[in-house]
Image (tube, rainbow, N blue to C red; front, top):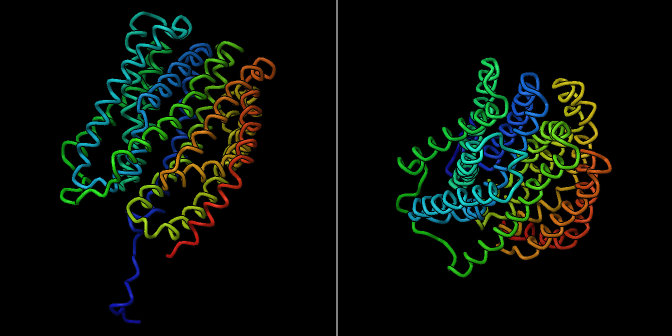
Length: 426
């Protein structure tokens, strides 16, 4: 049939700005990160003592979580409001980066002063450099939200795959050269991250690629922006407490060898959950850019997220124990139960994730903050009792129990919200 004015031509290639394309790219990147991250720790486990692997994992995890806290809620703000910022986009990006960079240095320095430095750092130089690690990782994480907010999620995926591959190459090279254990693993993680941050800065901020040049802003009033900022920051801080505290709880409760098992398992779990979670960013950006199409976008998102969440759970349940066996028999013996438990957590977390996403779309974050508070307090409190009793498996039992409580709390408001949104005119 010959196309007419009313019959659009069929695309030969996927729309590179579509929800599915950007989301698919981020999921693939998440899976690649999970695989390469596991290989990273497998290489490290074969080249360095378990105590060194555990210490390096604790330092890196702590720096990542402090970086998340330091980013305030600029990441969610960028994903939600950059599509509406018009010619103010560069100012928003640079301002947020300056604030978070300074805060990351301050938070990192504060941790060195009051945290368990004697357990984590070999020397004074390691402690002095730690705030720089936090600043680099803060910029690395914020770059994802900037690219997603500019409807360039595929480039965030490229950035993350580069980091995963580069850190593996660096740790293998340093390990082969017999360069110091903990320092080698930390440098392998940080140097590629710094390179990625500089490239994003050069392309987006300096060259202005992807920034709207003349579009008028469609932002809400300052009161609404501050309210969203406060709610999003509350969720960010609360969500960061759990992964910040857990590695320290494991180190103190079961020692550095137990921390090594936890680090390897958690690198796989975190990569899968991060990959599946990044599907939410393109949906939020698309809904902000085209609010009149919310019903259509929500249907597409729910279908996509259901597939991705099930795939992530299957990857953890089936592939996780096999991957741990490849790393080493001791890692498989001590981590297989935890990774299977986290596969169940992946499925149980779906309702809360969808609810949180819709709260961000509609800028109604109070109940989402309350739910995150319950989750964080529950995980931290129960893990302090569970890990000494069940070792690293206690982390999995804790997460599963708390997530089931959260499901019960969000079930009714989620049902009402989804019904309302899907009933909107398409």
